Image 1 (cartoon, rainbow, N blue to C red):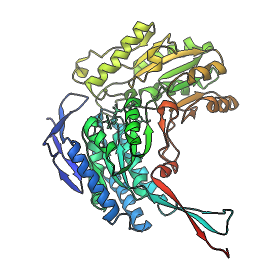
Image 2 (cartoon, rainbow, N blue to C red; image 1 turned 45 degrees about the vertical axis):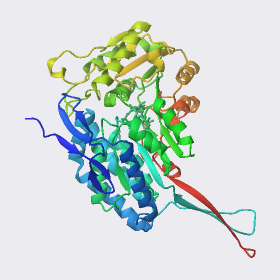
Image 3 (spheres, rainbow, N blue to C red; image 1 turned 180 degrees about the vertical axis):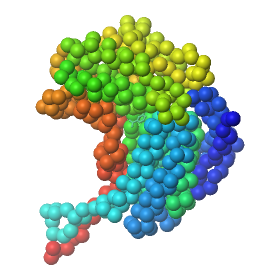
Image 4 (cartoon, rainbow, N blue to C red; image 1 turned 90 degrees about the horizontal axis):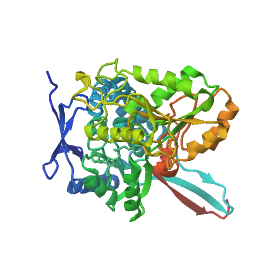
Length: 487
Ligand code: NAP
């Protein structure tokens, strides 16, 4: 029997409301094509209402006036309620995005951890006193910015929503979240949970709607002081231009084409596993995906032969099964786009040594599945090596020495993530310093830790999220000088 269809509304001023146009968007389960939910679709009018509500909540509501212990306890309660509802949230995310349930479970825990972490900073991070060259006292106050517009993509909805909301709340701002149109379900639940935890009405508004209407209205609204955008470099560029009109603060977390650099001395088993899961996690729909695999020439053939066996062994299937290692892509349109890159790679002369097909097994026919795909004979100038594919496709490129590895890694418009695999830690340190990227890891494919800053360089973005660094992007420093002749 099919699950009942969810019906969700906009969450504005603590109330669930229909879109003023009455429009709803139907969401399909990416694994089987079944109708999953009908969600109210906000337009410009609804977004303008949400901004007015958040503006009033900032200037007239109790949130900013609460003392640090009161605000801390609300964030801790949100964290606790996320943990209590973890199973429901993880299933919702897997049904909506198509990601394997174990990945969703991890992301729900990350969400809870974020609220807990930023709850802990509220009574610890403040201003400073500064020894200026004058008689008196110079000090800074860390102040909230005001209304923050948080725009979220579809690939890690609950994780990215939470890592934007929690520091913004910790700094006492008020918020509008614009989730991706395909994946608003867990963000809407987080909004409900926050109300249950005692967050005053109007402080956190969740407003799904098309980016071109609701998203743009949020970015353009003069009462919004800050935009934190995660998404494609193409839309990020537009957001930055629009935000410039009234000098909004902007954080952009954008695309990537990260390099995974494997030296001949690397621990082979770990490097192979890292090469698989740093591109096939979330079916490759990951801004941090290490989608360019740079392998030292002396081990290139051997490494790829072992890697292609591992790619072929990855278990595709129902996202809700704990056996499943890789789920479908998020929508049929997105799979078409990714498959287009597979065709481009073939035309460019790269050779497929694993996958490359839409699986023909009946059990996959209604979902948006694509086989994990491994290309050899890739040249870094090819389109498949330069553009973000955002799917389960890996491009393998040989290098002859350290200098060439760094040069290939840096020949990209992006600079988000990356990994280096070697037992020589001096070389690892030289390489991590030389690669132009915001985040990089040594001997692991994981580099996102919520306590550490995260973000990109070059066209991968501006600003940092996570860690204490995020607080600088959700607060302003007011500099105050008391002229005191005797001091
Ligand atoms: P996207 O198309 O750029 O959309 C991202 C968000 O922006 C969605 O909520 C979208 O709404 C909204 N949007 C679209 N047009 C807009 C406009 N004109 N004004 C304001 N908002 C607008 O990206 P995506 O396809 O959802 O996500 C994939 C991309 O995100 C990839 O490039 C990936 O690398 C990047 N990403 C980066 C990070 C990072 O931390 N660096 C993390 C995750 C993903 P609709 O859904 O209605 O279009």
